[in-house]
Amino acid sequence: MSLELTAIKEKIEKENIYFKNLQREISKVIVGQEQVLERVLVGLLADGHLLLEGVPGLAKTLLFSTLAHCIQAKFQRIQFTPDLLPADLTGTTIYNQQTGQFSVKKGPIFANLILADEINRAPAKVQSALLEAMQERQVTIGEQTELLPKPFLVMATQNPIEQEGTYPLPEAQVDRFMLKILINYPNREEEFRIVERMSGNKIPTSKAVISPEDILRSREVVREVYLDDKIKNYILDIIFATREPEKYSLPDLKDLIAYGASPRGSLNLALAAKALAFMRGRGYVTPDDIKTIGPDVLRHRVIISYEAQAEGKTSDEILRKIFATVEVP
Image (cartoon, one colour):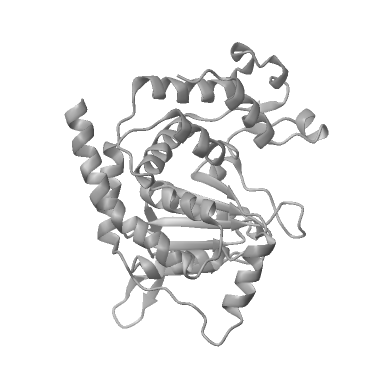
């Protein structure tokens, strides 16, 4: 096993250089938000879609467009609105009078990085059209099924649900997102740097440092990161504590959780932890990796009850209690 870990570590050290350069390049444009950037790169490495929640004006679009530029990927921003149609997303078939045949006109979904802006402003039909693309990495247009390019990553931005004109996303779609990342306001020092940097004569730009092929290769290395059986059982303990909290010395949480995390939550937590270990230059996952990335993987998968809502509880509070109580290996 030690020989395997040594081989994995050597691979990670080689591939990790690309992502350190990528982080530095994006940081030339994006001020602060180091944790958010780390989570975005975890999603990219683990091949998992991202849901970002925050008020407008926190550079969510700028972050993703900068990332696309730095990895030389095709980028598409789709503004979700109440009148958006599924065909506006996936494409449609067009009749050619000269040939008498239908041809496929692909929609904006056929890109490497998709920014689904304000996703919770769109109607249910459009939300459903995104499901197949996110899960199956393919789109059906008419009678034809078209494969999406690799890598393919959806980053959806969501306004806080209290804002006017927003609708809650269906649980089935929310579960397709590997991570739900909360973006907060920058602190005073960071905002000073933003004003200084973005209001000057020369606005900073980024350059391309890696290619889509580098990402696909790094994803294979991420899959090789060692996950001990004790860590696997730790993941399952956390997941099962969201379903049966009374069995984990958390009886007070039973009435606060309507639905616990799904098996997709277990898998995504394992993959995200592997990607985080890769980002930190390690060939193995530690309990700290699970604790660090766990809230982002599970906050949208733990559905709180009406009683919890009435008490003003959030899924983050419930998860904090679970992580503090479940025994660490």
